[in-house]
Image (cartoon, rainbow, N blue to C red; front, side, top):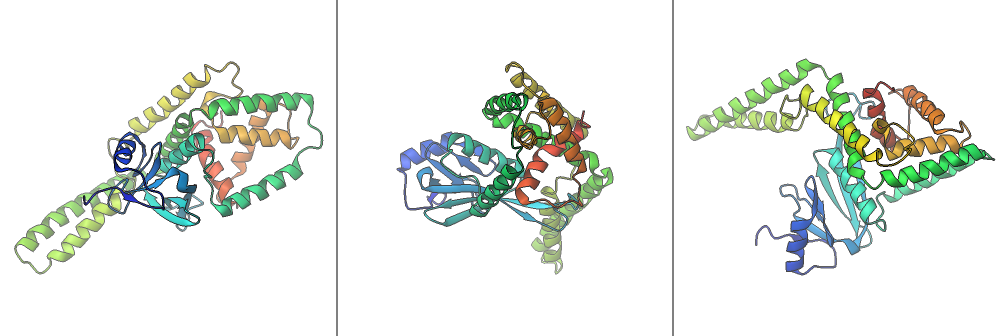
Length: 335
């Protein structure tokens, strides 16, 4: 079969088992994760390849940054890739249209297959170094009050990690709302106009090609370029890119999180900020002796996030943490 799922790696799976596993796999953008294999896309086809999970050594995100990417400036700031490392160093890299799909896949792998690393080797070294530096900053003596706060945080963190889809959706909904709120509305209509011109140009190019006109190829190329460029630009006003949809998405994300943490007696922070990174950074504040209570630490975290802007340099791992939670605080006005 021309579209038969192709094997990557040394270990194969029986075709009947493979077909059943692929059919039931959990889909994340163009890729998927089943019980037996991870499914990866080709340039044209979703889930075109598979790697048996026992062959996978690490799965991680790679972000290609364009100029202004870390500042959030520019229309096309990042390209997101999923990298799967298998069989002692072989790699397969898959491009994703939506970075949030990569994050959801990594969260799922982290919770269902803890034996598989979700960081690159370089990232693991940087994280280990960061942990070493943090340990040096830890207060020599943690007060009983701070120790109790840490215990509450650990239990809350474990509870929150059981539902990665909820906190990822909270983060992604906040990112979309922040981008929409900060975008110039005129850009959307300019993009729509250019896209429509591209469609007209493409249609005229096809007409000219059929009638053997000399300029047909130029119209074809311009039309295709405009359509492909602005289809992935996230600036076109569409059914999922308008104020009402984006605000409803944010509202539903908060309500879903409120319902979930409401089942946990005494969850220590407001549901609108319920994200593992928030709890982790509050924990660091307590360990450094900057406060003794969770509520006070949350206030310090808010001040820390407010101080971070495009002029502040941070490491890649910290950048990703900040990008996961700062949009939530921004759209909530730090309340």
